[in-house]
Amino acid sequence: MLPSSVTAAFLSLLELLGGAPNSTQSSHHYFADNKAPIVVRQVLQDKTRQLHFEGFAVLHSGVSRTPLWSAEHLTTQRLHAARELKRKNTYHAQPNLPAEERAELDDYTRSGYDRGHMSPAGDMPDADSQYESFSLANIIPQHPKNNQILWQGIEDATRNIVMGSGELYVVTGPLFEGEQLQRLNGRILVPTAVFKAIYHPARGQAGAYVTANAPGLVYQTLSIAELEARSGINLFPSLSEEIKRRKMQLPVPTPYNGRGRNKPVEAEFLAD
Image (tube, rainbow, N blue to C red; front, side, top):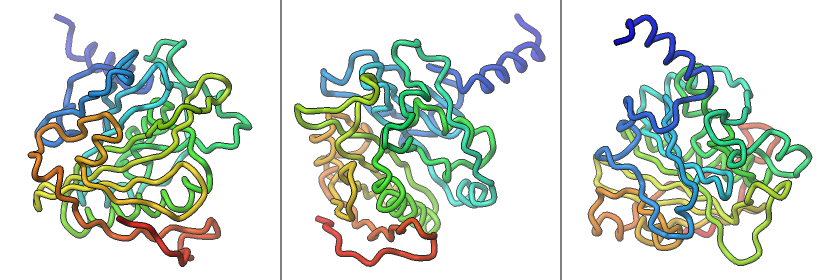
């Protein structure tokens, strides 16, 4: 058996490399009732790898070279800590993934798309977790006028639920719909839409936001059952069908117009 000091040093090295894929250590805190999302649609199952980081977990696809889902457990304590942390943009390729399956920084260069977080940097309570959130394994090509405006509002609305009621389990991910899908640099599949699924354990309620990966202020709210049928992923395997079918009432997001966080956009929303 290795001395504890050697083991600790090895784990620290893994953290510096950006997380240990397929590690089960302390992984269950990301998932409601310790059950990770399950990909049901066969076409999505090829070349998938589950990666566990300190603050979130992802299922990465070597076909799309993006996450299929990114899961986190949000609490008021975690978000209070995250608010005190200064953001440092440290985007990096995920070294634990095979080179042929992972995104590289050059894939996004001059692409016209943002490197859009699935589990947001703004949810991370410490520097290590924030660094890991900038792994390209947690990133999708996201239209800047979605990422920086409406999607920012959806992320803030989700945090506001947590601050008002204690905790949420959240699964965020891309949708790839239709026959004409685009790839960045011939490699990174561009999502057609983005979702954020929310489970409120204290209320026994769940629902989801979905928005096109495009400019505009139109979004939908869906039941988990509706989103699972659309995504091909069993997002919260432990939830009853009744909870999945009954759509939780979600707050209207207040997006920002890019000129500052204190200037909300006035707009009409589709939320049905």
